[in-house]
Amino acid sequence: MAETAHVDGFVRDNLPPPEEWPELLFTLPELRYPARLNCGVELLDRRVAEGDGERPCLRSPETSWSYGETLSRVNRIARLLTEEMGVVPGNRVLLHGPNTPWLAACWLAVMRAGAVAVTTMPLLRAGELEKVVRKAEIRHALCDARLAAEVEGCRGRVPSLSRIVYFATEAADGLEARIARKTDDFTPCPTAADDPALLAFTSGTTGVPKACVHFHRDVLAMCDSFARHILRGEPEDLFSGSPPLGFTFGLGGLLCFPLRIGASTLLLEQGSPPRLAEAIERYRVRCLFTAPTAYRALLGLSDTHDLGSLRRCVSAGEALPKPTWEAFREATGIRLIDGIGATEMIHIFISAADDEIRPGATGRPVPGYVATVLDDNLEECPPGVPGRLAVKGPTGCRYLADPRQRDYVQRGWNITGDTYVRDEDGYFFFRARSDDMIVSAGYNIAGPEVEVALLGHPAVAECGVVGAPDPERGQIVKAFVVLAPGYRPGSELARELQDHVKATIAPYKYPRAVVFLPELPKTATGKLQRYRLRELAREEA
Ligand code: 3UK
Image 1: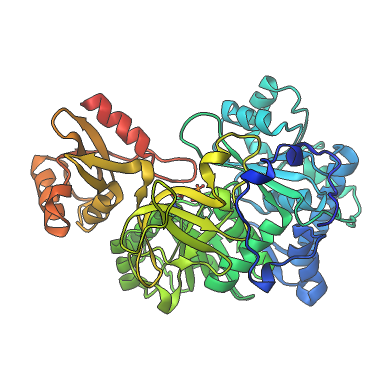
Image 2 (image 1 turned 90 degrees about the vertical axis):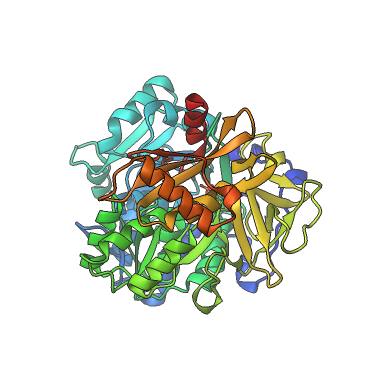
């Protein structure tokens, strides 16, 4: 290993002790990187050096920057960081804004400067930013001026966050004005392959958020495992989608994957399904990254929008219900690529594409990764027996100074907290988040399985199924349902949905309670918050 280039050793000093790291595997030659490696250089300079300088790189509805133009801007921003803001290698830099070419350029500049990017969800409020800034000991920030109110609110609570420059502004002290005065060359920091490149905060449901440390080599590993072997993008592809760059699903799919292969990315500030559908039609998007519920919503928009340009569509973040996969195939001819990823692993580690897909299964371990299912004693479960999903590969969990490291990594395995079953052919089937299992009258019932059954009924647009406290059965299965347009809530429809579930899966799993809601509670990354439904169920009981 090469010596670190970090002058500020804060992140390295707060890594978990080596014995608590997951076992790392570098089985494929493409995942063995040189000891000195700066992922920003690999994603940008290498493309320009190999002749992609004139090709489109970062796009938005307003602009399109070639690889050469992007590199020039990134160099100027790196100069601003190091010459005027006082950033030294290893410092954390807060990046905050909706997905735009400027935000992406700032991320690449942080890589070049050898600093550590901490990109946050654009919806975070001052109090949530404060937790991140304190945990990561952040003094520097590049932020979208439109989110200045929350960032200034955060600065008020943590004055050490003192060096903030805003972009997306015409102000004289804004980023655009300041970099206009800089030359467009910059010598990138010669980081070690295992120097930290980013801190990714988990969208944890309770308590202090956890910060996952990922190295320069990890950024490339997500490109050279899932993207290279399963996604198989092409240089002509235009990538787009909804996940924020602060979510590693978005960082990979909307920035690193396209740049690794000289393709281009369309960054959208608003990734709601109607906006996605418009953008796909207008810009002829070919590779799409979004969540299962968004694919379901896109189905309803496929009559009015031309989605014919789509070639590769990745679904992650939550389980992809088989009815959604089938309906999408029916409407568009496209076989959705499901993949389970995690912030701790940086990106997707079980997936399948094309003829390898078995609808209803997440897939098989992505090349470079191995996975299994373990029981509570960490012994391997045989095929067919559900247990705890465990995975190893070139990337893995390293929480910054957090005792929860010992929960996620056990005996060298990353334990994701999901209950899975594998079959004889090595395919992995999602059951539930381990804490979302419902125990009713002694039966184990996976909430998501009931959700899939409900989604098979045309009246159901979205739903969430949880356990509600019950004096007799311990818990009962309770469904929260958002109705599709044109359906009216009522006891008659509730009964119809219950009968539909009984006819689809084992009758004991049917929801004894059905509640209609106008919308479901979601996280900033768009995931259903089942714990909030459980709270609702407790209150109602
Ligand atoms: C769940 C899935 C079933 C699962 C993520 C792709 O979601 C990502 O990271 P998070 O840290 O959450 C991880 C957890 O989300 N999950 C994700 N994908 C699937 N469950 N099927 C799926 N396809 O509970 C997992 O443990 O927010 C996804 C790439 C990068 C990511 N960070």
